[in-house]
View (cartoon, rainbow, N blue to C red):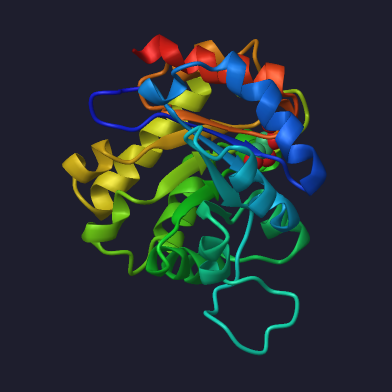
Length: 259
Ligand code: 13P
């Protein structure tokens, strides 16, 4: 983390878990465990569409933000089953995960559709959390930097200088997601530093210094402090461990080390 330049963000990705009716008890369990957290980080819960409204209400007055896990690239119209950025904003969402590897792998999302969604999110405005990351095969063949750089460049096409600091990048190596295998703090740092270098090339070094880059992939209450201590890792995108308010609180409190 580098709290002088960048916002620390701890975001939970609940994926297709939880019911709207459970949001209040989750908030009641989490809030007492993270007193004063807003002094050191933004906490975001990216809930299923059906729970976002309940999350916003459950955390009212507690400075925890809500987010979605996907959105349409279109503003409105005949797109059965899709949800627009404006609809998300209307129910109180402030963030939206874009291009998660599960969406790329299971639902055919491409760099091109990810780019359209990033532009649509910025227009609403929502903060897009752009996910990038390599497969195990790609890591083992030494092409991580090429893969991640291409994902970043393609996803950010046409994003102007004036908007880029509203984008959050999440580096999520696919092989570390839901597997219990975490990238070592050194490997995660190396890739996050390379991502920042790509951003500096696309924009400039000063703007790149202001973009929060999160790590995601089996982050938990045991490994969070070491990952968050890395200079280019500005927070976490937490899947499984965010479903447990006690574990998620420990991760949020681990980010305090940056203060
Ligand atoms: P896990 O923390 O469960 O590995 O999931 C990470 C992730 O995909 C967050 O978006």
